[in-house]
Image (cartoon, rainbow, N blue to C red; front, side):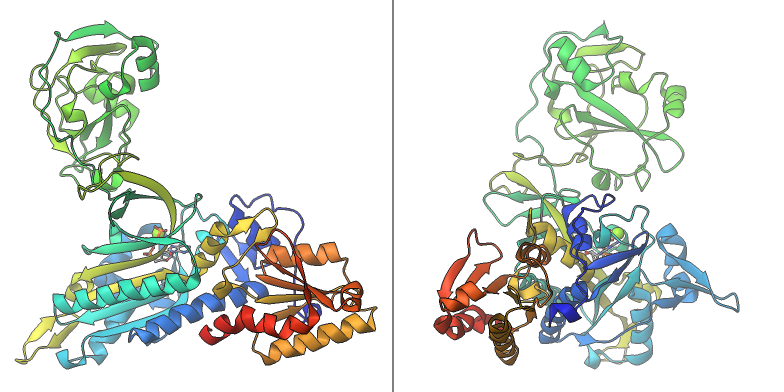
Amino acid sequence: MKASCFHLSTLKETPVDAEIVSHQLMLRAGLIRRLASGIYSWMPLGLRVLRKVENIVREEMDKSGGLELLMPSVQPAELWQESGRWDQFGPELLRLQDRHQRNYCLGPTHEEVIVDIFRRDIKSYKQLPVNFYQIQTKFRDEIRPRFGVMRSREFIMKDAYSFHASQESLQQTYDLMYQTYSNIFDRFGLAYRAVSADSGSIGGSTSHEFHVLADSGEDAIAFSDQSDYAANVEMAVAIPPQTERDQPGAAMEIIDTSGLYTIEDLTDKLDADIKKCLKTLIVDSDDDGLVALVLRGDHELNPVKTEKLLRVASPLRMAEREKIKRVLGSDIGSLGPVGLGITTYVDSSAGFVRDFICGANINDKHYINANWGRDCEEPTIADIRSVQEGDPSPDGQGSLKILRGIEVGHIFQLGQKYSETMQATVLDVNGKSVVTSMGCYGIGVTRVVAAAIEQNNDERGIFWPDSLAPFQLAICPLNYNKSEQVKHAADKLYADCLQRGIEVLLDDRPLRPGVMFSDMELIGVPHRIVLSDRGLNADLFEYKGRRDENSQDLALTNLPDFLNQLFSQECVRD
Ligand code: ATP
Ligand code: MG
C-alpha cells in the first residue's frame, strides 16, 4: 500500500473527550471515528487491525470444529418474550417497531435466535454436539458508553453457542473452548489471564472470563502467587480467619462521637485500629424492608456476592437515608449491630473481631469494647466483602495478588436455561425427547483492538504485536518525490516486499522525515526501513524496530537476507 493512496488521517492533538490512552490513540492514529455516543466507524487503518483479530478468531474457531453462520441483528420480540428476557433485559435492549407496529430489538446477544434455529433444524442426538458461531454486530444501549470501542453501544462480537445431549459433552466442548481461547489470545500476542467468573444475568454455573492485563482495566482480578487460582474479585471467595475468636475483654461502654462521621475520623480520634472498627451498611430487602451488613472498617462490600443472600434485593440497592432514619432511628454514621433489630449479615472477618467499636444506633454515639455473643447476638456470618491483596488464596496455596484486567472473552455453561424454556430438544437413543444443554462463548472483537493498545503503547503511540499490526513494515524514503535514486530504491524494495507477501506501507508522501516517522510510530508499524541519498551513496539502509531505542545502519547487500529473517516466521504463520 502506498501512503499517498491510503487515507492516513492522524491527529497531532490528543482529543479532549478521550479519557484512556487506547481511546486517545485510536482517534489520533485514525483507526476509528465517532458517529454518535458509543457508535464508531472503523476507518481503513482500523479495519485492517479488526480483520486481523477476526481472522485469528475465525481460524481457531474453525480448527476447534465450530461452524460459522450469520444471524440477523434485528430480532422479533416474540422470541425474547418466549425466553422471558423481553422484560428482564431492561433498557440495555434497544427496542424498535416496524411499519406494522410489530416489536423488534437490536440483538445484544443471540441465544434466542440460535435456539430457534436449533429447534427447527436439529432433531436427533446423532446430530450433536454442535457448536455454531458468528462474528457479528451487537447493540447494547449501555448506560455509560465510554472509552471509545472499549465500552461502546454498537460493537462486534464473536459469539458461539454449543448444544449437547449430556453434561459430559457440554463439559468437553467447554474445555475445548477454554483451550481455543487460550490459543487465540496466545496468537494475539497479548498478556492475558483466564479467571473464574460470576456468570451474571445470562445464568448458568460454570464460567470463565479472559482478561487482557492492563492498569486501566475495569475489572480487578485476584490470583494466587503460588498456584493457578485466578478469579474476578467480584467472585473471589474471602477465607474466614482459621482461628477461634478471642474471649471478650473489658465491659462495653457508650461514648460520644459528635462530629466524627467516617471510619477514618473515628480511628484518628480514638487512636483505634481500623480492623476493630466495624461499619454497618444498610441495603433494601426484597420485601420492602431493610437488611444490615457489617464489615471490618478496612474491608469493602462486594455487591455481587451480597446480592445472592436470602432477603437481600438483587441488584443490590443501598437504602435511602430517610428510610434508615425512620426505621432504625439514627443516621448512617451511627449505626451498629448491637440491638439493631433487623436481619443482619456479618462478614466472616468482622465476626472474628473482639472488643470492637461500632455505632450505637443513637446519633453521635458509639460503643467501644462491644463483643459478639455478649453484647449482641452471635453473628450470622456471610462472605460479603471483596478480597484484598495479601488475603490467603481460597485454594489454600499462597496469598492473593490483585491485577487489573479488561474482559475480552467470556465462556459459560448455560446448561438448560434457554433450551428448557424454549424447548430445544432432541430425540435420544430410545426415541425419547430430551432437553439439550447449552454453552455460550463470546469474544469482544472490537474491544480486543482497544485492549491491545492499552497494553502496548508509549509516549509516541501504539506498538502492535506483529499478529495484529495493520502493516508489518514501513518504508520511509527521504525525498521520494525529488531524488530519482531514492525513488528507484524505494519502489524496488516495495515491489520486492509485495512479492514476498509482506504487508508493507510505502510512505511516498512529500513530508518532512520527522513528520513521516512520527506518523509511522503513532500508528504502530512494528518495523521501519529508511532509504536516503546519503545512505544509498554509502550502500546502507537504516532499520528501526518500533520498540528499539536506536536505529541501525545496515549494508544494502544484506537487505534481502534481513527481510527473510524478519518476516519468514510471520509469513509462514499468517
Ligand atoms: P461487560 O461486563 O464488560 O459489560 P458482559 O459480561 O456484558 O461484559 P458478555 O455478554 O459476556 O459481556 O459479552 C462477551 C464479550 O463482549 C465481553 O467479554 C466483552 O469483551 C464484549 N463486550 C460486552 N459489552 C461490550 C461493549 N459494550 N462494548 C464492547 N465490547 C463489549
Ligand atoms: Mg455488559
